[in-house]
Image (cartoon, rainbow, N blue to C red; front, side, top):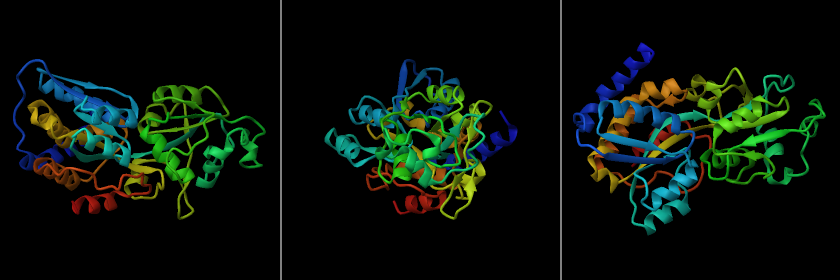
Amino acid sequence: MNPKRTLAGLGVAALVAGTLGTTGPILAASRIVQIDGSSTVYPITEAVAEEFQKANRGVNVTVGVSGTGGGFKKFCRGEIDISDASRPILKKEMDACKAAGIQYIELPVAYDALTVVVNPKNDWIKQMTVAELKKIWEPEAQGKITKWNQVNPKWPDAEIKLFGPGADSGTFDYFTEAVTGKSKASRGDFTASEDDNVLVQGVSSDRYALGYFGFAYYLENQKRLKAVPIVNPAGKPVLPSIESVENGSYSPLSRPIFIYVSTKSLEKPEVRQFVEYYLTQATPLIEEVGYVPLPANAYKMAASHLKAKKVGTVFGGEAEVGLKIDELLKREAKL
């Protein structure tokens, strides 16, 4: 692991340790922390789980990938301890949790640059506007917009092959909100999968393909894919990167990602210590897998929310787009 990144993580750990009062390794055997949800958040949570289990040999951390929506369904039925989410909890999910008596603490853990990708042999796409993406992905495009030159006459007279996350994905929810103006409003005639590796394979094997998913999966496969610069509200084409997310220029496709932890599950020492570990040790792991860590004070704030059991969400039960890091932190500070 990069020493610089490790030192950055240790800096966050030192800052938060006093707030958390973290204890030593858990020694009891056969203790399980159950997690499911977003494929976007999965690389972070899996990396944290691996490191945590090295330090706590008696704990088994399981991490599933059923999509943000699938994770919340299990979470609100009390089947898992933690839900990975690439968007905030929705009103229907809040209602389901309330009906089941599930209270939760919402913890933002990183930022993601949702990435639009094409095949490396694509030599006509230099940049794309949100309007062009909408023309391709809106529900009305199904069966009508089937070729590249129908989007832009300068582009080839060739069929567009589309790949994207399935309907249970938070990435699907966020992308459709940002691009078509309404969450889940999308054409249906595309190859959909909750497994981002399926999408990577689809785009990398077809010159006329286009797809989207989280930044980490692009970084892992950047020799097989080409990221598309997206024209932001200021009219500037911007590539997804850690820097463009941090400075807010990659808009509207940068977004916060979360873990949600059940307050009942926090009564189990292994769950509480795992979440504390996540907030103190995840920074270098977040960087390693290709996401943008939050500022150190954000993790300190999250730790205080965890300690005080600040339940609920700072969002209104609907998808929001274009929320910058500093705006998220101001909202968190109002809790």
